[in-house]
Amino acid sequence: MARTKGDHEARRRDVSEAVWRVLAGKGFTGLTLRAVAAELGATTGLLTHYFPTKQALVGYALDILEQRTLGRPRRTGGDGLAAFRDALLDILPLTAAATDSNRIWVSSWDTALSDAGLSGDYARKYAAGRDRLRDRVAAAQQLGELPPGDPGAIAAGAQAFVLGLVVQALFDPAAFPPERQVAMLDTYLAALTR
Image (tube, rainbow, N blue to C red):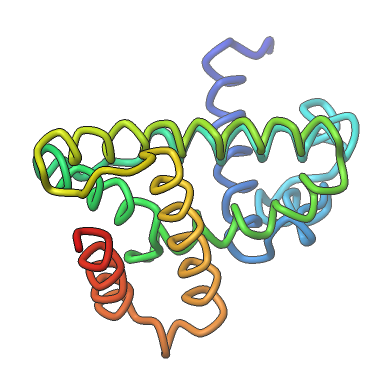
């Protein structure tokens, strides 16, 4: 019996979920065809139809990570400083899903740093994130909620702060539970408003 397009799409969704579970549990270093096949309950031969090489699997995993990151619900608490705060909160590992996503992002850094193409792509992604933050900083400055200054520099500092907080929370979640992360972010933002 011939396979239908629906069968192929359903299988691809199953593969995507298996890749995500491997990433969440083992990070990029644990991402292998064998690990995905085991998670899927299939053979590695089946997976080679989707991913003929490890690089193809890694590329696919990075696509899944970006799609899930972009598709995550976002806070929309208002304009100006509230919008800036919301954007920074959306980065932090405050929920189980956000923790998984951050764990995967952090584990992908080594892969990206060892590949010039991926490294450039990551640099563009982080620059785009800073641009979005810069726009929120500028809006908060126009409302008088943040003092004058270079919005790009403020955005870069805020991005660096939250990414550092992400790493600390991933390595020591008991010392950096969600409520402490939020309190630290609020202290950081209060310092910016002075």
